Length: 342
Ligand code: SAH
Image (cartoon, rainbow, N blue to C red):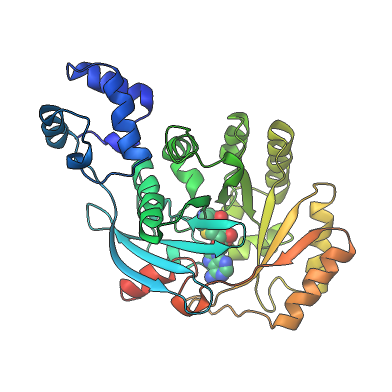
């Protein structure tokens, strides 16, 4: 079966020509799928009945099906649990900021990276998502909230750079002027640090923001929290980040989950400033969300602020991430996990 919603305009043109139709039909179909966000062929009123029937037979429109929706009473954050056509379950989040609506999407069902603090990785990766399944999360949420989505962060379950081809397709399509036309500057991809893929991404010359999940100021501590650190050293990772910055002109962001007694000491803060010196980097400090299996604890707010101030004192830009949706299980993989009975 053809996954028509993952197809670029050029591929769609080939498809309609192959079906014996005129080339301009591709533009009409693309617009229905990616601008009007149609979920069925019936809606595509400017296509012939015959063509709609043919498309229905050969290209089923796989979307996402909402199975749960939790709205935060505190801040308007909405957490969605979606089922895919094969009944796998993923989660996505809508966050409302002053500057617009931001959607956090998943890139895989589960994850293989094994980070100790993360709920998404507990049962490994079931499969990667297609570009259309990533798009469908944004489309479903935009339709559900009835407002324009202006930012997308690929920071939900999964390691996006472990699903590279589909990710790139997604980025190109969501920023396409024939689709939702979301500026690449408003797209963020977060990775645990797959070094060769970061370099490959740098060479694509995109304008997206790269976020690195750092979480530790040295190799020894990083290896305790993140298995990927056994494969790539921090030196290699920082080199790749510099390369990304040089090639794209885009500053890299660093995520640092603060774990009490593990990576939150003064010594950790000064090692971190040394590591990031000269990168003009921004650090997002996230008090770790305790996941039952991990046994890891978050530091108190005072310690988090102290850690942040240590970074600021050494001219490293840092903020403590405002927690949204904490009353609706909005942290990394937690809703899916509770749905699966974990
Ligand atoms: N695999 C990618 C993207 C998904 S994880 C990555 O590693 O970046 C998105 C972010 O949430 C990462 O920074 C991840 O380290 C962080 N995260 C996962 N579980 C968390 C938890 N329990 N508390 C705080 N941050 C967490």
